[in-house]
Image (cartoon, rainbow, N blue to C red; front, side, top):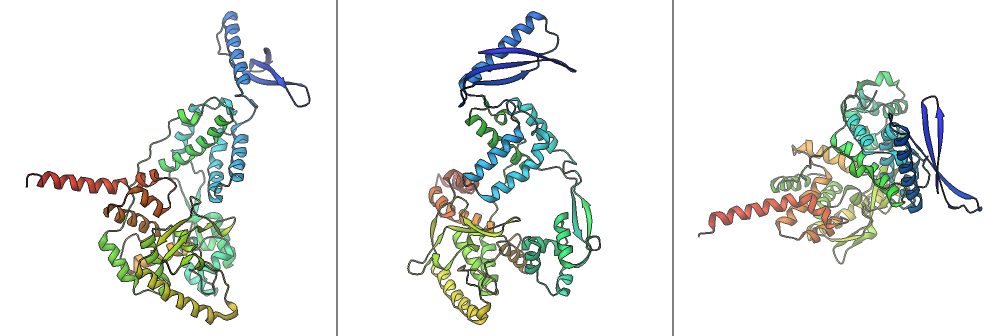
Length: 458
């Protein structure tokens, strides 16, 4: 049953709707409250009709289970959902990203009550995110002296500095190249090198607006949070479903040409055995960078010429390098070509020699790709090395994921079906594969259609 109570304050009169429905565990009545603000200009009769309609509507929501706590804000519920996702086993790096996004979402809409959040609030947020200056005083730091020389002068290596600063190896590489980094990271590096930050870096104001892709990422998180609220019957509809986020232009997956691939293989023959093997595995397996870094010796079946992909190495600032399941938490088995198995066998002999040479210094990690002392490698090391390889031989944009796209293209050109390719690449659903790589298939179909049109009368 619903009742209405006027509340008079400095800003006028509002009305509190009180619905009594059921009993609590202690036997007391369960009451739900909602405050409404009638439109201005209503006469007494219109006000009475408005309040009666609002009271009836709210009473039905309570009876049907749509109302839990009308005072709960989006910020409070977002914290609950993130904790819920974390307990359910969602990937740690996903949780980290969620919290990064919430840092901008909460100041904008966090104070709004969950049930009062409307598409207009979200559209306003998306508009603000797309404006210049949204990053605030988002200064970046850029080295103003030769960091590489300073590292050598301090008798350190980039890997050692990265470990001391608890940052990725790629961050140290970016710093040495003169690329911009986060101010806090710059301060950490300065402290580790024993040089005042002002002597080592200059500050650059980053005034660029966020990209549509990034804004859409904010939208997706808000949608995820409100979807949980809808599932728990706390709101009647997901406001994000009715909002209008910016459209994102879909970028086609970029792959190596056959000529580039042959050049990469040829040039890799001039490189150390470890990196030669890494390139072969990227080409023949289409594995993600972390999956190659996470490959272990006990996952190699020498009799079947097969490797098992069930782990990945990842990095986060709070954990450092850590082992996890694959992105989709699935296990897949990949048969390797004879040439790759032969190279793997050659590498194993080199690996065993390295272990003997290190003696007591050796750390038995079980990973195929290791540092000089046997410790597991940082996944960024593969990206960093391939970047240097790319510049050394004048081959543009050589990076791990491009090999993955290339394998998909080559398989499609061999008329391998999407379902098989999806399993090889370890996608959760075949729809992911078709969404990313269908343009390759369309090109092949278009080529065939043109050929048929030209030669159909022959």
